[in-house]
Length: 408
Ligand SMILES: C[S@@+](CC[C@H](N)C(=O)[O-])C[C@H]1O[C@@H](n2cnc3c(N)ncnc32)[C@H](O)[C@@H]1O
Image (cartoon, rainbow, N blue to C red):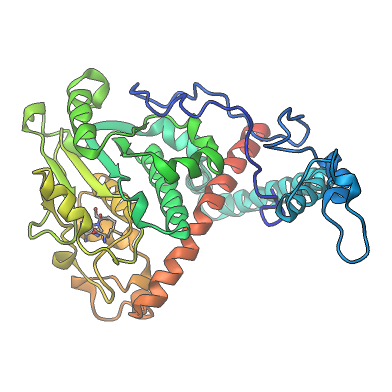
């Protein structure tokens, strides 16, 4: 899909915002069909979404400058310059549909050919095993998700900081949440997941721009706060649907649901997290603020009497830049710990080299990390732009999934 050219989505018509958000079922089962604003659908509500065919009328309706006349504006719908621009973009998008289809076909054929050559090469060099390994790297999110096992452990992302973010920070957070959902869904060992305090402008962004979230499974997005979410998860983890004592928990069969802890993760905490325990809930602040609001998440936890802990970064790696990580990096680190059982490896897998991470035992001669910058502002800027790309990455991944399904 040519993301560059895709017009910004226009406001949707008559869809039911309340449909799935407050549901407390174990999965977002996509109760609401995603009514993408297809280019051909004919909206009935002119206030929300005029048709592109109205463009000429609309142009007439723009009050003329200079010597022109505006008499015809009475019966024509009034339209702002912005709406007009959107309509033009939409018309162009519609007109180029066939071209895009052709381009996609060509890209798919190229991809097939590339993969065929890679398989040939792998077979020559390493036989069937190498081909298998290669094919594994092409596995789609969906098939990886099928191999994923739910453990009785939970992550809550506390989205209760909507008012503290500007629009670009909020959109960054939305991308991080999307990434966190996706990483958890396809992790080898995944956790129960809730986004709490999911409301206000953040929810609006999902409802309008990232509406495919309605089809997400294995997650709850609730308007209640993180304390309420922890209660729900406690119940869920104790039930048969709460996960299996497998993988990292295979030898902890004597663990009991009532032993589970609730911990708010915060770099401002004095306590250091040493391990992730079964039946426990870990809360992560859903906030992008360049640490402008110091210790705000820590204070929320303390106000509710919830324990806090920081990740053991200092014990395992030396970092050039500050130790306040992004929400999705913290989720990723936890998932990697479940997979690898080692904090050091988990940090190194997740933290990008530009964060300056070096395993303490490998401080000398690690070329990959030596290039890292300790320029915090550059780091933050880079982070923003990277995260802005995430939603696109995920969309591209999903498009790939569809392609692969079509191929097979
Ligand atoms: C970008 S930070 C939010 C910074 C915010 N100013 C605050 O008060 O925490 C997002 C979240 O990631 C988690 N986090 C970031 N760095 C962490 C660390 N070193 N240890 C534990 N949790 C961390 C915390 O839950 C934090 O709320």
